[in-house]
Structures are given as C-alpha cells and as structure tokens.
Length: 543
Image 1 (cartoon, rainbow, N blue to C red):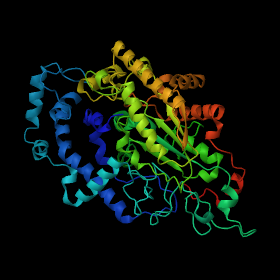
Image 2 (image 1 turned 45 degrees about the vertical axis):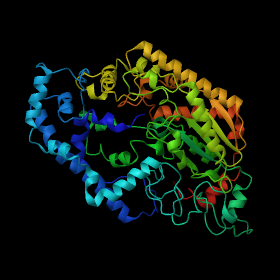
Image 3 (image 1 turned 180 degrees about the vertical axis):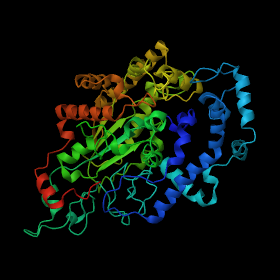
Image 4 (image 1 turned 90 degrees about the vertical axis):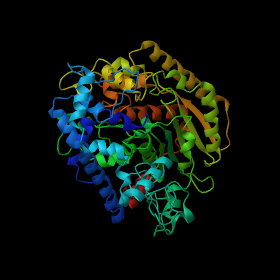
C-alpha cells in the first residue's frame, strides 16, 4: 500500500528490459466517446519517450552486466536502484555470488564506469526535465497528488478521459464543458432538454408528455457509491507477465500504459466501484454494478476516492477530491475502508509507526465531520474494520514467488525478507518471519477495528447514519475453498500482499449480503421501471 515505485525499482532487471516492446496507448474507451486528439498524442508521446529514455539510459548497462554473469541483485545495487546504507546488512533476493560481494560489486561498477547511467545520476535529470514535457508532467503530478482528473475542462471533478484519475475512478462526464452536468446530481428540470446527471435518461415520453427522468426515477431513491480507500480498494495489481520471463509475449505489456497512468491501480475492475466485466471469470459483481442493476437511475454514480498508501492519518490530504453537493446531488453510500496502512509500514521497527487508537479516533472524527458538511441528507457511511493479515504469511511464505518459479529459488519468505531489508515492504508487520511481530500487528489492527466500531455505535450525524462491518477475509477464504480454490489464490501474486480481483469481488458479494440482511434501507428500492429504461435507453450510454 506504499508507493509502488520503490518496490518495482528493487527488481529493475525484470521490469525494465521488456519496456521497449510497448508500441500502443491502450485504454478502455466506450464506442462514441470523443477525446481530444491533442491530449492523446501528447500522452502517447510522454509514455513512449519515457520508455525509450529508460532503455537508452539503463538498457545497455543491464545487458552488459547480465552478459558478465552478474545476477539481478548485483545489477540492482550497481545501478543504485538498491542501496546499502553504512552499517546496514546486505539486501539480496538471490543467492550471494560465490566471490566476495564487495569484489563482485566493484567488478560490476567497472563494467559500467563510463556508461550514460553514471552521467544520468550526476545530472539529476529525468523525463520531466525535457522542455516539451515539463508542462504535462506538472499537470499529471498535480492530478495524482490531488486525486482529481488530469483532463477536466469544466473543473467539475469528472472527465471524459479514462486514466489519470478520469472515469476509471469516477463516473464518466457526459458534458465536459458544463460544470452543472455530472454524474450523481439531482436532475435539472427532470432532464427534459439534456442529461444533467449523465445516467443516460432524459427527454420526454411522446405518448404522455411526461419527462422520462420523472417517470422512471422519481421516488426510486437513487444513490451513488463512494469509496474512501487505499490501494486494496483501488485494486492495486502488477501483472506477473511483466516480471516473469517464461510468461512474456508480444501482448504482455498491452495494458501497461493504462496501468501506469492509473498508478498501477485498476479501479475499473475493483470490488466497490468497478464497472467492467471481471477478468477472473467469476459471476460476482462490484457493489456499484449491483446498485446500478437494482436501480438503473444510479448509472455512472460512483467515485473511488482512494490512493496507494492512504490511511486514516493521510486521508485529509485528498478527501477534498470527493464530489458531492448537499443541495444539488443525490445521497450516497460511503464506504470507509482504510484497511492496512494504519498498521502497515516498511520501517525496520514498524510498531512505533503504527496508528494508535487515540490518533485513529481523532482523524476519523475529523473525516466524519467533513462528510457531514458535504453529503446530502439520507446518505450512509459504513466503516470497514481492519483484517487479520496473518493469512499472508500462513498461506504464502513457503510458496515460490513468480520471480522464483522458473528456477525454484525465490519464495515469498525470501521476498518479504528482501523488501524488509530495503525498508520498502508494504507491510513489515505481517510480511515477516517474526511471529511475535505478526501477532502485535494483528492485535493493533483489532484495537483499531474496535475503535471504529465504538464510533459507529456512539456517534450521530445529521446527514448520514453510521454503520460498522468486520473485514472478514476468513469468510472469503472459506467461500473460495467451497468452490475448490486455495487461500493463496486470493492474494496478488507479485506483491504478495493485496487482495486480488477474485477476493475483491467475493468481498463485495459478502458486503452486499450483510447489508441486505442488516441494513436494507442503505441500498434503496429496486426500481420497477428498470426494464422500461432498458427498452428506451439501452445501455444508457455505457460507462
């Protein structure tokens, strides 16, 4: 749940070498969507230039070092992606070379002594130092920092562009030149003349002169879904094909530009706000798609206000990207799911960095007050508790990581140790051979969950009601085992930490069933006009 770049940089040999095969800018556009050719060309140029700069800078050195029988650890340290601080132990993923490490490293440095890599480090330059890319770099940086769309002409926080915080993260805008038109708002004059809320329902029925929005949606209790989450909620995913030589093909990197411009997250496939069909071929749908099926008037009303590394302590930095107007918009279901980073960090001693129950209480109350001043009346907020992450070590430690599957030389236990040594682990507390540390991490997670539960049962707000739900990953494991699966198949294989797409959708299914049983008012009515909406408006303009 930390920034993915540090983790990727620890294995550059496996990630950087194939980048030259990228040739296309891929994203999931819907038919009929119009995008600015200028923006598309500039971003395509940005990605391709980045790719070629990386290869021109590091490619030759990597090839020279591998040709000299240097392993990935030596390459990593030689090119300064991996660093060993004075007095710190040597961090390595593969067996240490037979010759002395200092001798091998010096030998490798001599091989690349006069290479462009050294000039690159001395110059301090990067892709964004190129004059023609400086402006777009700054704009991309701001979009990611502020969690708002890179391309948003009318500045209503919605976009017609998919990535860079566009409609993969929140409903697609249907008029990017009118800030009064966006998903989730109450219809303007029943959308007689235009689709003001982008749900694809507008105009007047010629048979009786009644606006379709009034006929089909009035009294149906429309509502949106908003996730306040971290990388698990955003569905962080690194494809094993990108780092596993035996699985690479010409098509392996087809979606890499999309992934990079979505921060290695895949919110369009997530369990909360996902709107695309699952790639995992299971029948379960996201919470948003279930709400949309229940009431077609909810079409496109989703927001993933989530970020890699997010926690209760960091949420205030990007919660302002949430879009909801108390007077103009529909109510919303808000899921608060900071499920890891309050106990997860990569420090050598992670315990002092963990959020205390007192600090959690203070920040969560601050968040709730913010929501109460922005959400329309009739909204709902649901806390997700923190999981017991012991299942990571229990189910993965003795299995081979994708990097070690070919030669049977890298287990998850070794990967965890390597990341902890570099202090870039997404969660040292649970991704550790130290059972005492894993237990302490789970105990703190339970304390924080109990704090959330206490807030949910004791605090009241004027614009929303408040609920708590356990993050019961063990229930998901049991459900998966009933289907013939194994627990390790529910965890992202490359990082060995995040719930994968299957787990995310099974969690959505569990969430939906519990809400239906305990708090059915949260989901709103099932719209009896859904079939008529389909007859008149088809797929309502898609997503």
